[in-house]
Image (cartoon, rainbow, N blue to C red):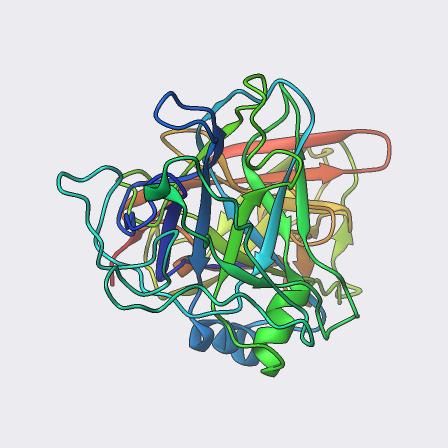
Length: 381
């Protein structure tokens, strides 16, 4: 499988109005600009997320093949107030931080981890760094609130340029009123920098663009809430690696079928896999309505190949959502001297759930999706 997911080990939201509050185990991650009656200045929320360096290196050293891309993925829980085109900004963080054990508006509030005021914990006297003009680092916006209690500079610190490809940050994703609100942003340059050690891996920070944050206009109050790593749903965020593992090295003794009526059977599917499994699924392919011929062996035992433009996808069986969608580059079905095949790394799938495999075949004049109840389950190892 040329799509491999790892999950974060830390995430937390920072709230400017509650400068020392930690929300490190809240099931929701928030990015917002809200004009509340509690203050004359807007309340801003940003989100931090961290993926383990050892896991990243394991994927790049031992799993991936050839060139690769990395994407930050997160599923939307609720979205409000996005009534015009808006951009979400993502930067690599430039300072380490503590996850903490708080949730939003605990009573009393929890202060044992990262907050707007500090990357450590309240009382540690460790501020977010204000950056250094000689390095590609910027500090967060330092607006002072009318109420002195909220006059706290902070909200994170981040890198502004990458040594890999001389890219200037931020990464961006645009949202409009009716656009898809799920997060799917290419962060390859940052992962390259983490892997090479050119910058420390402290995670990523997500925030609204400068024109939105701290904007007092009551018509500009966008709120994005994503499922966090502590969600009780099947939608935790992930860092998704994608690479092209496609090979099409066929046998001259096996014919390629390109008709619109095919029968495709999935082999090498015991039905249950532990989460650390890697499985190679093979496909048996024949014409659905074969021509009558005289032969001494069964026509149903004759192997065929799918066309080169064939792809697989994985759906969650309960929700019918695509966990891995059809992709013209990353989910192409390979072939060797035996049959068509593709590989799936099971630890990129949520355990204790059932999944379904779909096959798409494009023969040049039409495209057809085959759904023949190819089910399997991933269990905890």
